[in-house]
Length: 163
Image (cartoon, rainbow, N blue to C red; front, side, top):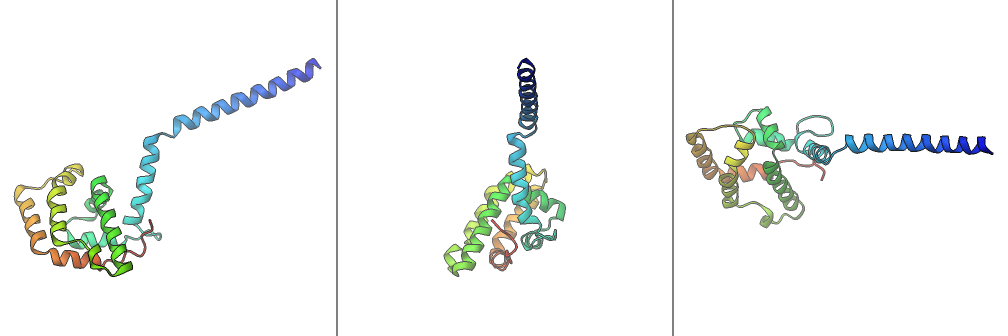
């Protein structure tokens, strides 16, 4: 009886040590920051790359509309502020494509407002300095080519993106 009780306690103690070790290992290795980064990375994958690993049409449209290189566009798309704006635009494209209702389209004033209100913040966050002259040229370009920008946005094939 004493031997049986001793074996049972050894087994119980072994399981307790193994369980505690696993719990501590998992709780220390998975942090809230890592979970948020993983979610962000997986969400952005749908904006930047399709399932085959090719650049999406969303990515290519941004390249067409801006003079930025691919590396900078990736940094831009990974930026939280820009990602929020991009998500809203993609939702607008979906709604417009599903309904055909022009009220879902961005207005020229809204496009101009988004650029004016967010350009400095986003460029600072991605560490992409521009001169005051470049800033004014960009805003002027957006103001004078808003119809082209909106037309290009709503012609973008977003079929590969899944929410």
